[in-house]
Amino acid sequence: MKETAQVLREKGLKVTPQRIAVYNMLLHTQSHPNAETIYRTLEVTNPTMSLATVYKTLDYFKQLGLVQELNVGEGSARYDAVVRCHPHTVCTCCGSVSDLENDELTNLHQKLSTPLDFQVECEQLILYGKCAKCQMAEQEACE
Image (cartoon, rainbow, N blue to C red; front, side, top):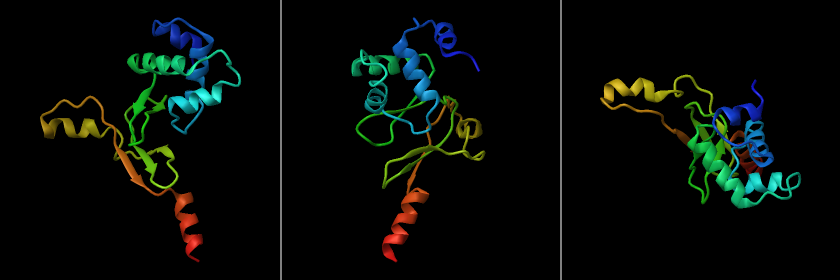
């Protein structure tokens, strides 16, 4: 895997400690955090980083195709460093967002482009429901 600084340079970005920290965090998490969560997580090790810097960095990353922005119906966007088209699940109880690895649903746009006579570039399929943890907690509460 390429070093983060090299990836940023190849995209034409100036390499800064803040950009490296934000990108590395997104590469190493599956929680799909929002900007505020990223900021709170990184402020301990990056005390000079501001929330505005995180927002600007995420915007640059999104424009350059380094991250994808997810709108899951909350007040703020979430971010994912996995930029290939893939579906997500959102738990309506705890709010967790997860990648959904399902061959039938991944790259759905490629399967639909011809029948729709519409050139789909990418899709964001989001399934809402209850995660296994919340289902289990609900069952235990009823017993």
